[in-house]
Amino acid sequence: MNWKRIGAILVMTPGIASELWAQEVVATKQADPVSFSWINWVVLVAYLAGMIGVGIFFSRRESDSRDFFLAGGRIPWWAAGLSIYGTQLSAITFMSVPALALTQGGNWTRLVGSWTILLLAPLIIFFFLPLFRRLNVQTAYEYLEYRFNVIVRWLASLTFISFQVGRMGIVLLLPAAAISAATGVNVLLAIVVMGVLATTYTVLGGIEAVIWTDVVQVVVLIGGAILCLGASIWAVGSPATAWEMAYSADKVTLFDWSTSLDAPTSWVLFIGFFFINLVSYTTDQTVVQRYLTTKDETASARSIWLNAIMVIPTGILFMALGTSLWVFYEVHPELATPESADQIVPWFIVRELPVGVAGLVIAGIFAAAMSSLDSSMNSIASAIVNDFWLRVKGEATPHQELRIARILTLIIGALGTAMALIMGVLNITSLFDYFNLMIGMLGGGLAGIFLLAVFTTRTHWIGAIVGLISGAIATGIVQFDTSIHVYLAGAAGTVTCFIVGYLSSWVIPCTRNDLAGLTIHTMRRPQSQPQEEVACPPSMKVSTR
Image 1 (cartoon, rainbow, N blue to C red):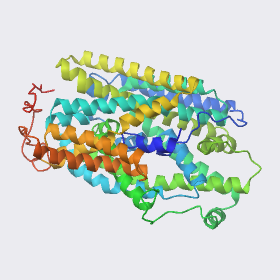
Image 2: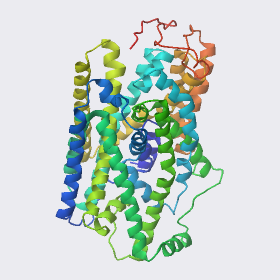
Image 3: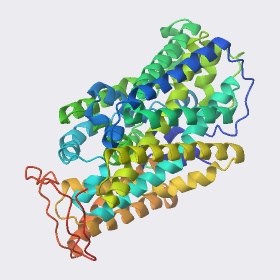
Image 4: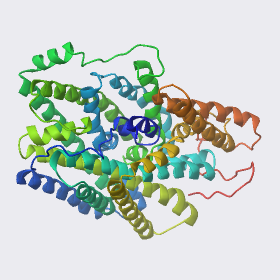
């Protein structure tokens, strides 16, 4: 299984930027794991117990589904920003990004891709955020019903749900396998512990528990990366020594200005990641949900900017960590190294960091894996409750809303944990990969639909669906039938969806909806209800939910 190519498709769908660089660690043999000392165990258990405490604390503040999914707008902007960042920073990212700098010829060129968030932040803040906030939506896909109709809303939401369900097992299994190889902890035990704990605090505390555990996780992981960087540099003498070794070995390549489209050049990365990030920040409920948990539009904008600003220095930090680990093991060739490069970070943590500190950073990796799971759980439940259950039911009491939200979260968490266990026992990850790949082909098209919704007034719902299908086909062609690098597949899908969807809306006759307050061209005109008419075949009644 080629994880890099699978990962490149995964990032074209909501919330999977981290899997882009995942390597196959599941089947890797454990290479001489060391004893995880009792002090490390105490720190790990205390950290994980604290996360349960967070869930219990916030469980008392949940009164309805809006509290459970949006925290009643109580989240400070800085916490929401850290949580957005933490949602993108999975355990796989923490382990695999340094592995790139370690193994791929000192390739730091991926940093160019991460910088595109600085261009996207103003786009999100000035065009998408006002629409989401002023319509008071609970999911990103609710906006699509206002703009088009319920069919487009359901199609987009179902695509998101399907992909998130398919990925949950992988985001638990891969970190568990890497931690197991480094520490000797049983893979299945690690999966069960992470799955049960993440499900527990998410069921209890909802999005507030998820966000505040994200905040702690970000602090611990960034702090752990800084400690690892400092320890590895200290062990070789000085920063100057480490830099000289890395530079002379050509381990810090930042730009590749060649014009090839079949290699990860700077141009390919810049264009590809612009659209990859566009997908995440406009169509991914796990991200959109977080910047809707703040009190107002200004606070949401600040949270988006905080995340964007953090991406730059932390990207450099993770690449520098990978390079410093290469220097460390070059200077100390007598030290054992794992068989998979993705295991190098937890391997180094357990063997080289002080006892206790190592336990805390490993706990942070556990927490990062749980963060990926809890984000999926809460956002999937939010989409099911708001886009389907309440949309069909019409009305429910606050108690009923909260009860169904917690039940769904429990079921989703159990499903994700079970999937990881099944993949770990039967080694059938390839089936889930191909499922995700097929669903993932729709990711670029989803971004295209949102662009059509926000920036055009001509596009109707049939054109949007035609565009989505065309975008999926274009993504598949780039992925499977051309030599173009897969990083550009999402760009191809988004652009194709936009062009075909717009032109189709000119060719296919359809009654136009009232667009007051629903596009950047009509934003100043008030709009309070979803579309009541779907006048081109067939018409259907749409409620106000």
